[in-house]
Image 1 (tube, one colour):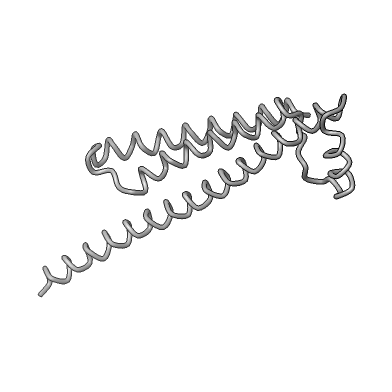
Image 2 (image 1 turned 90 degrees about the horizontal axis):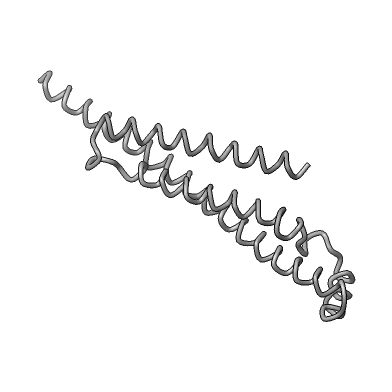
Length: 144
């Protein structure tokens, strides 16, 4: 099951990075490197965030065996905390602590990725509508 998730996660990452690369390649061919807009740079940042988020999800499954403190009752947390220095509980405590930290980093990265994509769409549509309103203004001025 975990191998299917890893395959799917990295396949989706590869598709996303290829799409971002093609988008940038076409934009550079069309307008040149110096005329890239804010939405182009935001897509590069989104690719970096998506890569980081995929690696964090991979790390939770592989290095921390999917363990975190989510889904635990307060009693289970208290018992694990009391026995954190003894035997097998020591390793479980370490895995759950590091897994929870990694999971939190993944959530923050995912949220930042979503807001970056929203900002990218906003700047892209803003650029399109400003360019169109500018062209309409030139057309009307030419008619008069």
